Image 1 (tube, rainbow, N blue to C red):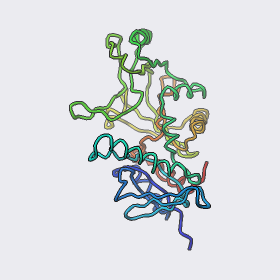
Image 2: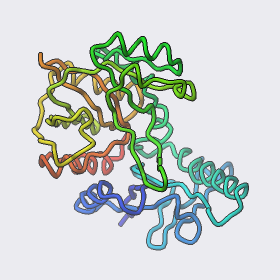
Image 3: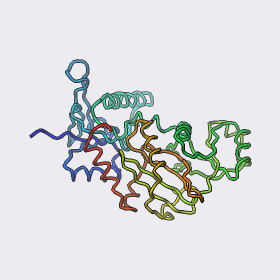
Image 4: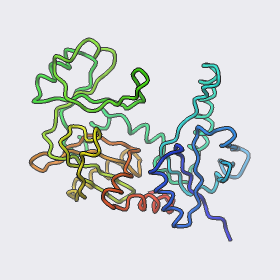
Length: 319
């Protein structure tokens, strides 16, 4: 019997979302090779040859329990992988080794032309720029809140004064701690008096506050759409998950079509969109997370999100 082609799952050690998808793949009898780039060394080995074989890339990725033939990968689920930092090495050696892993292991995987990527990491990176997201959303017909990206304090104050309520939010989430305590940058209200010369250090994103009645998180998986209305009194619903109520949302056809067109433009096969619904029932664009969390929404609503991911990965064909 011909050996079944495996699905590669690249993610961190504790990833409930990946666990859910892997369980669904197991039900379909699809082999899975799970690895974390941070385990390079004794727990992860890559070997690849180029230029001397019939195929452009020939080699293997090996973990202590599984081996994947690079020429026979069905699909790659690029979830939340961690890259090694080599804290035991001197700083220069650490940076050098980390770069070799990214461009050696990463470059080898990126060279694969056959598997379906969910999503390709280079496409994820390209899609993660909020200013570019806003511009593309407007091109595709979404209603976009008035937004200013600037490191000019005078421009920031003038923009905030001109809005009936403005917020500030991060352009990119990064790990951050104060006095050793992790902190997160929530979207929050901002006034002109809060703007000082510290704004000059880096660009900030200021945005008109949408008079919303609810948020909508939309997960697209291939051609499937899963939309969930999130009701709360919070400006940023991520601040308190215990305060949220969930209902399945049925999007207007033109909104659904535009969201799929958005992913097609970015060459992504999945993405998590955040929209807001105002008092008139109109949808406002907020942002896209090309590799967002969704597992808790399946638990809350029963929507078959993980099964759709498993179907996509098991099929393994480019959309």
